[in-house]
Length: 183
Length: 224
Image (cartoon, rainbow over all chains, first blue to last red; front, side, top):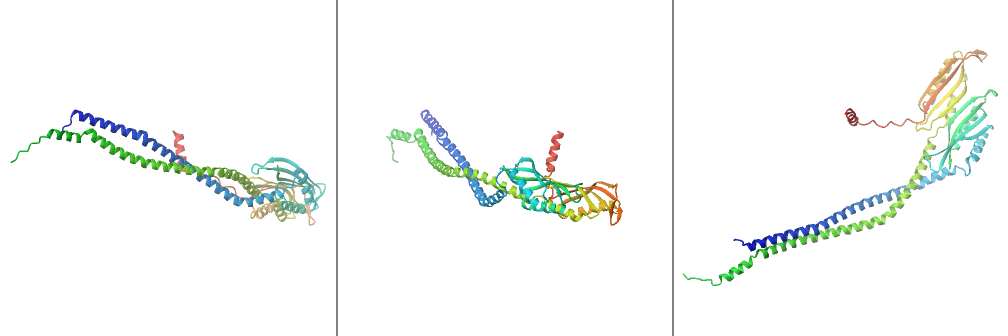
């Protein structure tokens, strides 16, 4: 079959219309639809990740809540060991009374340093110098043992014991004590 | 044989030409393709609608969870603070260094021929709790230096089971200027200073060395 000029023109026109149709279809319909769909899928994935993270946070909180009463109890017990008021008012008195029970009357307790506790928010460390001017070794050792057993928040960081020349058999004792108190 | 004459051939030719009109045929073809594309678009549209619906569902779920998660984060921080404080307290209390035990060991280990005249003890606040005891004293006996040496050895033996890395060294060991009367006899003396070092816990393990490959690579880079 031989196509005439008129028919060739019509075929070309049809081809152009098809190309136009395909362009409009992909550029104006399918393209934006696909872009929107991909954006929605991306957002969905982001929200899913956020939901997973939020659920993880909730789970962690639940786990921590489960162990919290135990820690709260420990903190309550520890806080109960620290009397209210300025430590200068109660700590030297407690030390003096404790050492007095072991016959060590000449005890002087002075605060020498104060520093914040970085690991313990709301608490600070006080360093005390406890001086016993005249002490027998055995009662002094017993008093130290009693002090260490009773004062859980205090720790003796240094001990200095010297024989005194004025009284044979007795020593001068200087204890450096670190104590944790509320800020 | 009969002769057939088609007197309408021109009309039929016109009809045939009209039937295979290229424009009409291409319009049919375009129509078919358009229908296919429209069907595919409808499918895509349905899929996009499902995605949008899923997005709105997930967003709604997240919006519901978000305030709860924010509260949880705040509560977690509070709880973490409490837990850390509590654990630090427990660790500190359990890791205390007890001097009463040290003093007890000293009373058990120092013999009658030795008098400790001065004792200085310090414990560091590091993780291993390194401690140092410096003892100054006088030993008496037929061999006062040997008495002091026995004390040094006994200190190590006594402290070793309870503490780690116990070492005792003489910082000073010298003859005393004066003698001491014991059991009716004047005995020579020696003055000594013993430094006893110990630690409550083992040292923390050092961090692992970098891998050989990395080291070699770093070496090559530096060479370049």
